[in-house]
Length: 360
Ligand code: SAH
Image (cartoon, rainbow, N blue to C red; front, top):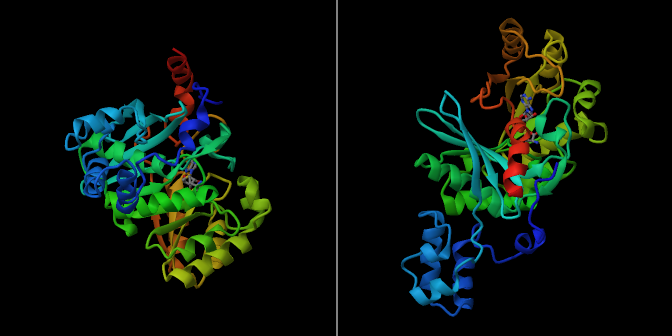
């Protein structure tokens, strides 16, 4: 379903002049093009990334006449359309982009951290069987600034610095690799989040893991494996038919070799489907000799399919088999479950409301 209300959709999105996402050097060049001295670039940079300016009119250090002439200039900030707070303090946001489309972003606070789960696309083309986002189809890629904006929005709403970012919201980051890499660089260099605290999660798009490796970023790469063999994987993930488990793992090995960094594998646990001890043994066999860490994700029920989350016994058994094979393993439970469990569901459940309010 498309949440599009404005007719000139592409006008703002193709605009090269949106300011958020630009580096200090680019902003300096921009102010100079506007006939201003170079030092205004540094001021703009600070107001964009430290003060969270939403309009150039807000930047009080700029001369009034220039500010007024820039009223309405696109900075690249979204608006919070809806925010739902769970009892564990997780906040799920629906953000409205400049063309009226809605994306989902989550802020997850813990004692020492504030993690943001960002979307990289509006919708998702991958259509994994267990994922709510894929059920709604794919609309478009996000621009780098629209990814950076999500982090800034959560930071401002919590009034706290964001420590970690995970690309585990809507979309497949590697299907939008150029904008995702640009966003990662901006989050690291301009927003100031450590590269090792940025995680890209991918189900695998041929060639892109090697491509990412060439950037030599010190980020964490998480690969959504979800199955211990090809037959099972292609049953859960349609794109795996063409991009086999063997090819995916070969690319991951190259990534480790090129970057010197290990790869994390994510494995969703679906009761009776991929959570049996033999699946764990097969997985351990597959990952032998791999410098890795496995994240087990017990399934979050979504309404469109009837998979089940395994019980504690099954989860522990699976964990034990991997540990016995000397594979580092952790179980990751999703936070903010009552705020519409799995990612993509909040958006799906609010799509009606959003459409109504946007139509007004
Ligand atoms: N497209 C990327 C990132 C988005 S999803 C990827 O596939 O990695 C982030 C993680 O959440 C992925 O591992 C995905 O498989 C998982 N996920 C999706 N739906 C889920 C559900 N219903 N329950 C638990 N995990 C889910």
